[in-house]
Image 1 (tube, rainbow, N blue to C red):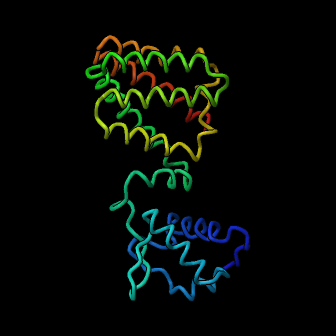
Image 2: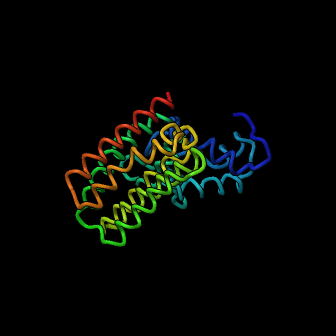
Image 3: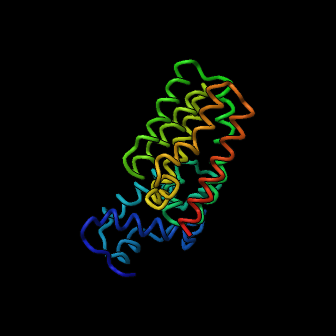
Length: 228
């Protein structure tokens, strides 16, 4: 194995091990080689290796048992949505699956928001929507758009929808810069999102769901084209 550079050695080692695990070089359920062997192969100390292991244990990719060894966790069977940012960073193929969930969950959230939003929440949605139109550049428009969707999730009154929305947006982070295409023109972005907020404000559940499906499908198509 090639020795790693000494600068940010734990970060580099963590990244290397993570990529090896996600690429299948260390299959789920298998034990990693002994620490001494791995440390020697990567040209690092066992202390550095333990630090990298600790991070990967926290990430849900490894589990360590004293006196037994370090085993690769079956993250697809046991892991949670908190792994998505790491998986998207590893392989852009995951983003299309994230978009599919975004489309279905987003439509349901809009429908629930139309049924349950309070007066102040409807007012907040209108204010945040205007923030999309007034944003200065594509990055600011994208961030303003995200805040509208967070507010929609809050308006459902269901905190699980809020957490799911946060998770899906966190999954975008590794490739967010490549997903700005729908937000290049603030006025167009505002017009695209407005039917969703209008339907929620009117309490039109079916209309909110349809508008959200149209919005999410349109922006997904634009973003996937930009990624391609």
